[in-house]
Structure formats: structure tokens, C-alpha cells
Length: 244
Image (cartoon, rainbow, N blue to C red; front, side, top):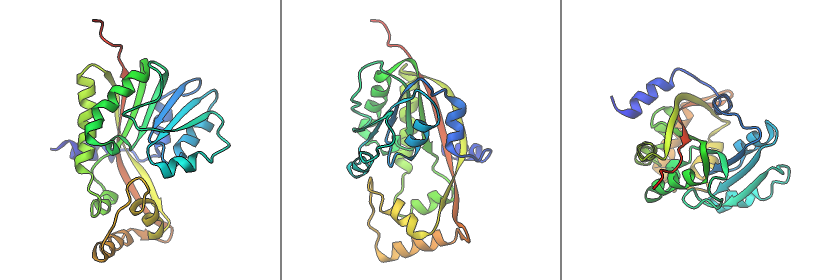
């Protein structure tokens, strides 16, 4: 059985919001937290406001999303920055926890290994990296892959994590599989947030657009279209550099 198929099978066991996963695994109060690929800062807001004494650096590479984040005025413990994981603008050993929510596979392939090295650099020894990635399976993925097939980059992200562990940068603390609920009010919301996402907009011809809408509408109900996205979380502990 392939890795993705095994992961998808295990993911069927638990359905929950991702916040339940990271709040179970991590103690965030009193920590310097780095979020790479913060997007529209929805998860950033949850982390920033759900505890005490949390300092957050939230980085994003999409300039449009970053400019919107700079307009946020009610999160004084969050510092937004424009940067990718391959060049983190923080000192060595300055971060307690790193989050990447569905963002490692968006890093350009030649920069994935460098990004893991950068995460290791900024984490204090023993600091934790929480890396969540969608498994290449599920009903939502079957719609997405019609116009944006992520199989190669998702597999590359998983291999990059394995390589970083094998290289002695990290120790695998725990690997978790779960289903993350998703809901769209209608196709217009799906089109705005997914097809026209500012970080990777897509151009669909009329036939493909019609097919995507048809497949999406098959999941519509009175209260929207509901999906369960199979997810894998790798929780890694940063290991100290080897002495020369």
C-alpha cells in the first residue's frame, strides 16, 4: 500500500478541527511562536488570543495577503512579516515553536530542504516544529486535482520531512492523522477562496470550469458543501547541532 493510501486510511479514525490537535500537543503560553505561511491570519488570531504571554511572528510570501494582514490592529502580540520559510528573518535559537499549516508543499521544490534547515536554525534546541500537510486523498482533493494536482509537491513535502529527520536536524515526536472539516456556503465561496486564491490563482477554460462546478455541486446541501480533508501532522523536536 502506498504511503498516501496508508495515511488516508488512518486519517478516517478522527474528525476534528485542527485547533484540537495543536492545543492537545503543545503548550503555547509564554512561548515565542513562528508561523510560516500565515495566509489570512485566521489561525494566527486563534493562537494569539487563546492564551497568555504568547509572542507570535507570522510570515507570509503572498504580498496581497500580507498587505491585508498589516491592516490588523487588534493583535498586539503578533508581528507580521513578508518572507518565506527558506529565509526566516529571525536570529538563531530564538523560537520555541514553529507552525506550518498546509504550507510546506507550497514552498518551491528546490527550497524545501533549505526551509527545514532554516526552521532548525531558528528553533532553540528541543523546540518543536508542528508541520501539518494534506494527504493526497478525499473528496475535496478529487475536485482540486481537476485544475491543481498537488500530488508531486505533497509527496515532496513528506520526503523533505523524512530527510530532515534522517539528517539529524529533528527527532520525530509524534505523527498524527485526522480529518479536518471544511465547509463552503456555495460554489462562489469555493471559487473565491480556492480557484482564485491570491497565492496561486488558476485559469480554467469553460469546459473545465463547468466540470469543477458540477463535481462541487454534488456535495451541496441546504447548509453548504461539507468535506473532510485527510491531514497528517508531524511534530518534530529540534536537535542540537553536532559538535565539530
